[in-house]
Image 1 (cartoon, rainbow, N blue to C red):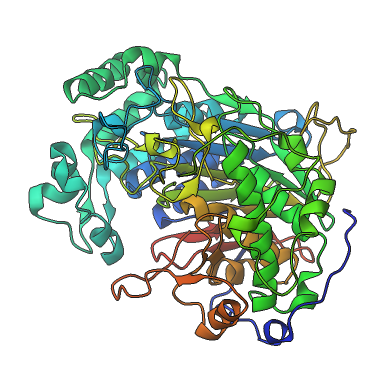
Image 2 (image 1 turned 90 degrees about the horizontal axis):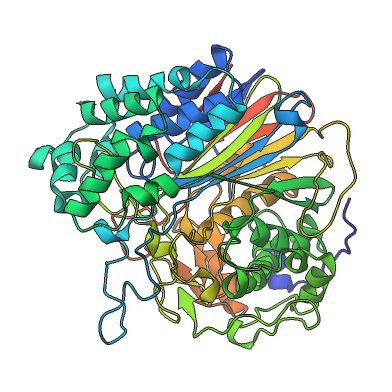
Length: 605
């Protein structure tokens, strides 16, 4: 257990306010053996089907990933990329070690640092987010097929059958799903307009949406996954790109490879936190945040999402996101000070800079000396899309998968590969197009995340798994060697969310709500969210946060903003937590599906 001191001196006006969150009306879904949670009920059913047929957690996760490419085209994909964290529940599974698969998109070989700038050096609007030049080389097919080959049990042809069936036979749209397909982006590109919007005869609730072109593509992948990168499929993708002035070539596809990276591990109040390494910024920022918070007894400050807790958590976010912007990028192109960022003494030094009653303005924040190297020179800020998706799986042997993947913005670049039926990503916007200019999400990013051929853009995706005790042997982790542990610790939580720059704060709040504040997994998924990312220096809230909580924090000195406050048509919310917990008393699995969307579910057996 990490050693921590307890700090309870917080302004009375903050501490006395009750939690702004009333417990969710729905209870977690419970199952004895296995559980799947995702944003779409058909994708969840695909995973459960595979588990019932003898598949393990990886088999089910691959089935869910391909199914989401059919039923959730806004973010589910075969034209994007992402991460998969695998935590074995038994020593016999995958040699008893955890695995982190990086199947993030890569910049094409024709990419350059200034490719989105005009002759005057200004960023060309939408060039990195819309159209053919916005796409990185997709990694999803490589990632999912690699996972199945290395760690699955049933084989690719079997686990892809639910996705192929859904594409061929179709699925019934809810009203919410039909409205999502009305995206104006899709109307800008002929194949997208034809497939998703029937050339202007928009789909309505209750209609069956069939995708025969995608079904044929999925069947080709199931028969020969290498076809997507080195065969006829690759040639068709490259020819489409060339015809539409895109950058991805057959050589780019052939050069793509999945990276197995060492997961990061940290400890928080006696729990082991297994999480994502770079090019995800999420894991190290999460661990740095939790290290800072380990010096506080949060429940003693007030209830879940009370102003007193929000203040301390926000100040931890502020400091960790400052380091994110200065240091993080693709580890294959940069030396990243992970050990220093995860150092408990560094967290303790940061903690000394936190005022217990008022915010530390970001412009005045000074990093503690003696821990971190000098950051690379930069002129300032950049952003990242919230339209991603996450799914979690636990099988009957306790093996767990936490996976987040994306097209970046909703429906990616908007471009569908004609004849193949899948959308391409706009992941190039996750690079820093120009130092000092915000990208799609307003995040600060430095030279470490500049565009370069073959480089993977920085991400906030944070697939995370929590256990009750240290579990694994790592040859090298955060610059240190750890000792061997014979048996895995008891699984406690499987977490993750979409949300762009808000992903890390969403995962942190879900974890804190369950482990510190005692919320059940469904209540944690449904609780209102808050976010701070260093710059802009604004404490952001979902629209449903009670005004008295926001007012209390504003009175203490924060600049506050409610999401979509003046947009009556917007729910003013972000993220989609798809969570699984293990009941520490009964050992039952508990699934929490985020009710911000109404077509997903948690299910198991």
